Length: 57
Image (cartoon, rainbow, N blue to C red; front, top):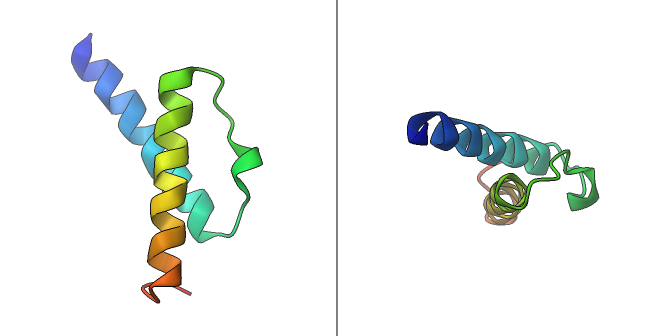
């Protein structure tokens, strides 16, 4: 169960990162679960930081 949970949260983080790179706003978060939503937003914030540092365009 824990492995499955981690995979789901990791996927949420990755999806948020991709959304941030593509320029989507944080209101486009598809998750309702608090844990998954916070992971998605964490990935989204990380992508914005990377974009601002010039790692991606």
